[in-house]
Length: 229
Image 1 (cartoon, rainbow, N blue to C red):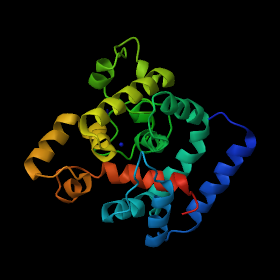
Image 2 (image 1 turned 90 degrees about the vertical axis):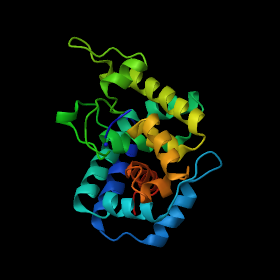
Image 3 (image 1 turned 60 degrees about the vertical axis):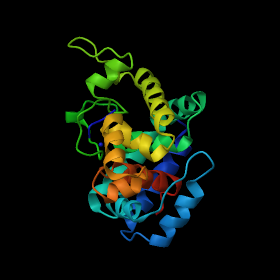
């Protein structure tokens, strides 16, 4: 979807704020803690890798000042949209771990790119929570023109993101490859697989055939599993 990167009770919002404060309090990223948290966040439907590329993404996401500020702000914004995203994932039969995608894409901020921030490479070129670019948005039924931009309707764009992610998984049968397709396009992923003779997304990242989007999303899953990391 990109070429690039809840209104709940006060108690939940407060808990999120406390968690995000802990996140900024300690710059160390413990390798074994990342491995353990990745395992805890995994299930039969979605495996969270803790490979070297994910370790590096974890250091970027919650081991640097910029990454930690981004995650803190994203976790504070997430409660406004969490019910929408969680319910959509359930309705479409998709893994709950995919709630990490809008964290990387928009920091859970529903704004045009110049007003928001994305960690998704190569940069903020989309719009909305899921940062659809105009061509992909139109492919999935959204109106994007000078008068209306339905990417900024969280319900409409979230439904489109569910369908896009489902289509990518149907094609590749692997969530790592599907996430790569979400960021770089299915054609790019197909060409990377053909050129390198492997469909291991992390081997393709190490070979430079895919960018670091997939490890970043995995790191986001990990920090959402345990914000105290």
